[in-house]
Amino acid sequence: HIEIFPVPYLRVQRKKMKITRCSTFLLLIIYSICLIQAKIVNKNVERSLDISTQLIKDLFKITATNSDGLPISVYTFIVPAAERKNLAFISARDENKKELKYTERLVDGNHQFIIAFPKSVSTEVFIIEAIYTKRLIPHPMEIPQSGKQLVRYEGNLYLFSPYETASQKVNVLLSSSNILSHTQVKPYNVASNKIKYGPYENIAAFTNQSLIIHYENERPFLTTTRLERVIEVSHWGNIAVKENIFMTHTGALLKGSFSRYEFQKDSRSGHAIKSYKTILPSSASDVYYRDTNGNISTSNMKIFRDYVELELRPRFPLFGGWKTQYTLGYNMPSFEYLYNSGDKYLLKMRLIDHIYNDMVIDEAEIKIILPEGVSNIELTTPYTVKRGPNELHYTYLDTVGRPVITLSCKNLVENHIANFNLKYTFSKITLLQEPLLVVAFFFIIFFIAIISLRLDFSINTTHSHKD
Image (tube, rainbow, N blue to C red):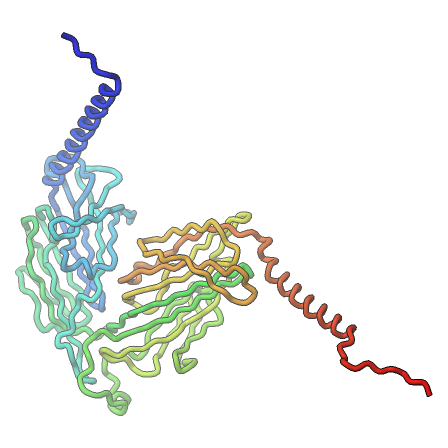
């Protein structure tokens, strides 16, 4: 008995067989990768932990090898869930400082960063840099005006890794030699403001050894709680930048009242913020600095070859919990940042800029105002941002409004200072719109004036009478 199946049925069966084969092939690949991953060993780990400022800068130089001699295609770096919310920036690069791509995924409550290597070899040497914010806790939380700010760091002494670690060293950099207490896991050595741990050998995977350091840190704990940055582009040769900056001293709170007399008598309050320096682009001009009360004259600007340094001094020193806000603005020539080929334009500028050293920005909103008549807008950002709905901005002589691109991002540091690329189309004929509007306006005014002078609008007319 021979059973004949219709052609559509055979096609469906063939598709099912292809899907089954593809699934089996993918499973084999995943299984092979898992086997390779399971045999990766951290041959050597050199960790540099910098907690000398309000930021935690964690740098790992890792030498990873495969015990079977097989090539390593990917490497998994783990950030525990408790630390992920404070992670502001992470990057991976090879020995030649070339960036390595990575993807993030959540597994068993931990955030895994899967780093891919372009050339798979059995031994990889690479560097991972992670920067955290708001992990240094003032201890005590309140100090008097003349007191010293003490902070507490808590983390993992070892590299929290899914692989075994053959050898590891840890170098900790502090801001002061005044160390009240620290974890003592031998071998270790304390010299001035540095603590050296290790080498430690044969560390099992997922080992967690608490590292706690209580020390003096009087570096500025200054947080920009909100940044409102507006970039207005003009095709008449100018780019205007305006920043509304809201700041809070997030260090130890001031205990008791503030005494101006005591502060002027003895200004050794290291945790108080008296001034800070902002770096502007070298072409910045017409700089202004004001707050809600008006222009602030307590600032000093120095012009260097590659940048403009602006020293800002608030109206009052900032202690823990105190807030301030101000507006900073300047102009720049558009030819340095705006490129064109015919009607196609490319704007290349920094998404955010320097505010102060070791800065922390909780939330930033960036608005880019383009000329009226722009179309085909394409935006490329150096990192992930939230894109808001497009808006329209109206100013003098505008008819349909200027397109406004709104972006927002959170938990930013200096490493996020990078350029965005904004492409758009703009017809040069549109540049004549505003001059023509001005000409038309004055033409209508003069025309009305001429007509009004030639017409007689009087109510009574005089008639000549004969005697």
